[in-house]
Length: 390
Image 1: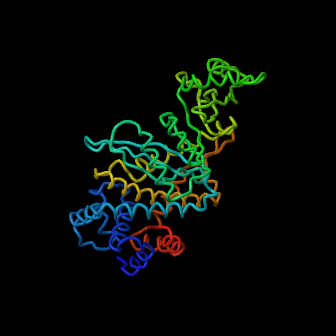
Image 2: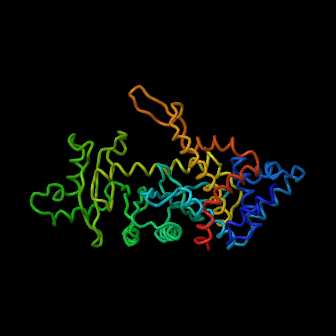
Image 3: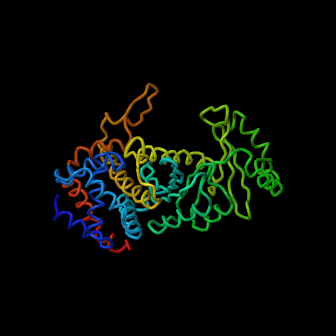
């Protein structure tokens, strides 16, 4: 193990104890090597990572447990540092326009893990910005969503960004909170949601405003007409004096169970709303990479909420390293990066994350190479960390 290099890197984390930083880096390297968050698997690689082949798996497991048993304030401090690093690595805010929000859940024995996660969308990829372990079954409530937004806002100014979310993230109090935070949104609706409010808007419509005059049932009928199949219909309406845009459009997937798609948004342009919403799918891809297709987050054998959140911070940090390297590789524009279909369309042969993971697997041979990579990053962000991480 390179003690001088560890000491140098620890200097760039002034708010944390050097031993905590050292163990966090060892855990990160071992999790990357193992591609699993299960400490029973991770322990087998710690000796190889640190160069201490005489250390037993049992001793390495105890070391891992001690790390996750740090006082809660130290765990929170490490989380904040890793999240700050994630934000710094993806660049300036002007490159970020969208946020995605969703939950990912699984079970550990009888315990239900549910991570409510807010992501920034960077180069089309959702990257975790903040998360809360809800430690319960069922959907999140407004209070829990507000907490995620509030904590994320301490790391990144969210003003002017557009939140994309699925049908369970509704509610007038929630909408009002986002508007007050200057966060716009595009959220999918279930059919027959806000019918009363949409119909009330018909009474305020002026002569000649065809769509504004139309009631909910009429809009649904018109959306099935061929002329509106690809462009949809929109109407402005109010909830507690706040103005929103309702959009209904034909479902391009031709799903007989859901022939139409419905949206509510603070945006005004229906075309922008319809084109923007599919970006939300990137958070599903993110969860897949953190779990079954990447670092096997579901294999975690820790049950305390804050321990799970710290592990999420580590794998999110490793995930963003892979994404950044993947994007660098794709900029080389090799033909092998893409699949080409008969109709002329092209898609990535492998995901941005997978491309980066493959590249870094050839770069990280042991803790020394992992630390060297991080040290070069730390040199660039020393001042930013010192001024922003408390």
